[in-house]
Amino acid sequence: MRIFSSIPETSAALRDLRTSGQAAPHSVGFVPTMGALHAGHRSLLQAARQRCDVVAASIFVNPTQFAPNEDFSRYPRTLEADCRMLEAEGVDLVFTPTAEIMYPPGAATWVEVEGVSERLDGASRPGHFRGVATVVAKLFHIVQPDFAFFGQKDAVQVAVLQKMVRDLDLPVELVVCPIVREPDGLALSSRNRYLSAQERPQALILSRALQAAAALAERGEHHAVALLAAMREILQEEPTVRVDYVAVVDPATLLPVETIPAGALLAVAAYVGSTRLIDNVLLKRTDG
Ligand code: AMP
Image (cartoon, rainbow, N blue to C red; front, side, top):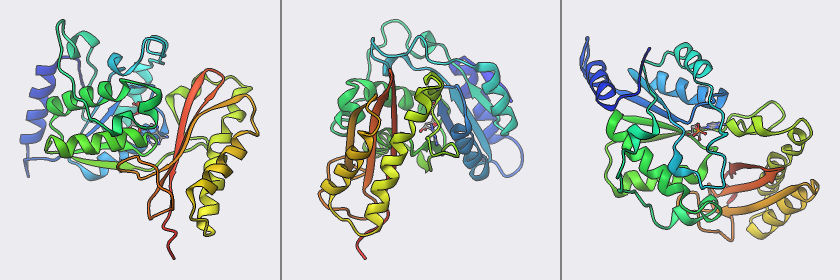
């Protein structure tokens, strides 16, 4: 596994990997991350390894997607352990740039995906998805992947990036992988390590609320208001958990739906202590 922080070295190494050896050109799969890797990231690496000849990953805690009051400086950084996981999963190349490399002095160009970027997490975190779209567009230019792998965990990010790829005609296919959970249902997240021993069980209320609403939908409840009410009721059972939003939306536009069509997205964001957690389920078809 080769590790680079320089853009020209990364591009050159990927050119070699893509074109050398038998049966070239080889397909390149890319897994962008902010590090602090866990089994959710591992599932993306495995999906990439299965589908592509060459696997590249990036580790970059992107400053432009954090607001000044957010956790950029204390975001967990575990590069050595991350590299062990990447190596074990058969990653060929890791790109670990510094902020100065990605944003040299004077950098002033942004990718803004209007509409979807302002909904759900985008409403709570203004400017977040401008930072995400910009850094992912830059990473795509540097790595030039055929396939890029993202987690359904970040459903708004998926909607923003799908739209960016379409609107900018980027020659990459996004592959969305299912949410990996702890055995008790908590969606894996690098931010789970912020939770205290007391908060950890409280955080389960997010997945419990989603599961209850999904079960209602499966039993034939077609009305978004009923599902939203059921979720809110369960979330209230943990008075220390502060709900940011609950939503039933179209997964592509993130606009609210009133009745549940096939594939509606049920999403929640909530603060457990000072930690903001997100979770979601894609509802099964309920039009039978
Ligand atoms: P991050 O390092 O948090 O930026 O996440 C990198 C990628 O891993 C994103 O595409 C996330 O959606 C994905 N990811 C994070 N948590 C999970 C999870 N629990 N299951 C599946 N994918 C995940």
